[in-house]
Image 1 (cartoon, helix red, strand yellow):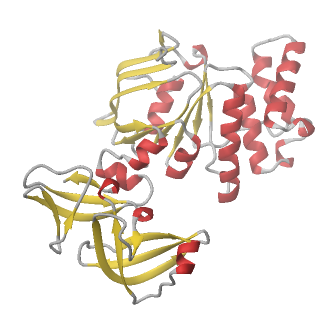
Image 2 (tube, one colour; image 1 turned 90 degrees about the vertical axis):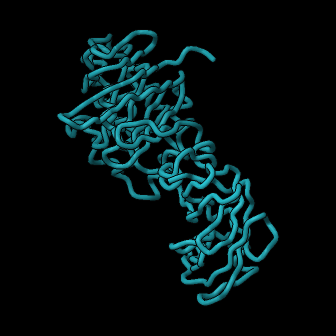
Image 3 (cartoon, helix red, strand yellow; image 1 turned 120 degrees about the vertical axis):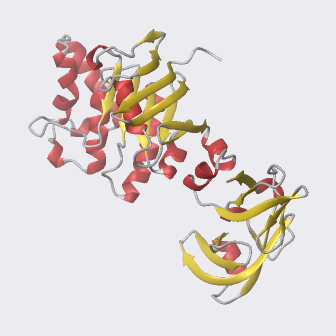
Length: 352
């Protein structure tokens, strides 16, 4: 593998007695779309600000393009940060907003015009170059803010919750648009988000942070299908948890049933067995595990149906995700008794 564009080694940051960043190690590759994912207070925004130079680390290294930039001020780093607020100048046109940073660098006018025209083509807003920000939609303003950051051609672009101000449908559209622009422009993006779906859709790799520590990093598929901790399993997507105890090489649930899992616990350990709702199958022979319960609730989501099943094996209802065609072929009502099956290979086990 080639040398990473960005290397973070044992990064540390304290605010008083609070360890905001606690020994994080990460590598980010050239032209990668990388997501920092975590709940509020996880340290993701602090880490982003350290990469931008707005916070200096108390320890560790931040190596960008082979150079340690840990103590380099923001204006001397080949990095740009796009804020959630966009911060466009209301009295300037789209083209003027994009050109502003280049004008501050006193580049020749012809070069500025060429670069602005090029980036307008990339964001597909050339026809709106003369409009003011208040004449644009939310998605268009977001693209202008992105273009203003990209036109300076940074080695690394940092995005702090860039889609947070958009409605749900527009967020979905802009997730794909950001991926397209990143791929077309060929610049490394690091995005901070608390939205799991957003990270899974956009990123080549995802890092999950909790309490200033790195819990896990990997591709969206690795993070979703192979979580390495209960927190990661619960934080990404939806997961069913069955309290279990290891007894004689088996995982025994609270109702005495045995749950087969891809990974076992240590002898005598207590923990949980975990399985995704979409891995559960109705009244079939689709795996080594089965549980029977009573349907307590049904939530219609259009593309799928989420069934809540009360069982003796878990304190919380077991969630089952059925596609529309399966739900039509096998109608279910509240109060029905149903059995679900699932495979051991789809089951994870986590110790307490």
